[in-house]
Length: 126
Image 1 (tube, rainbow, N blue to C red):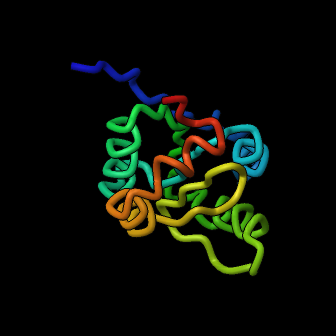
Image 2: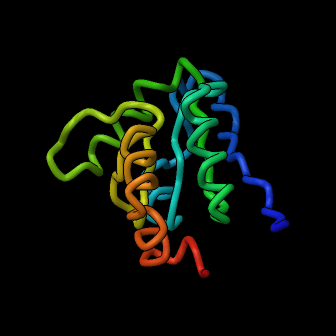
């Protein structure tokens, strides 16, 4: 049986008093990681995406967003989307571009297209 490395969860540091926003640059996280899952803390759909990727042997970076920061993080992520559309959680970014949510990840996995995409961005080496 093949053993996978557990996923890492990135928990943003607490914002300084009076800051009122997230102190983490989400855009930088997206650009620096070959695959990143951004979701609400405790979201079951985010958990499913993480487990699917772990099952494939990918160790995704996970950024969990607290409720007060959702709007700010979604705004940052929307600026990365080519068509300027709204980003919904969970959002999966592959190779610095928005790949989609749970539905898109599951559809590409079922059709057999997900593994080649992950290999292309260097998230999977098999």
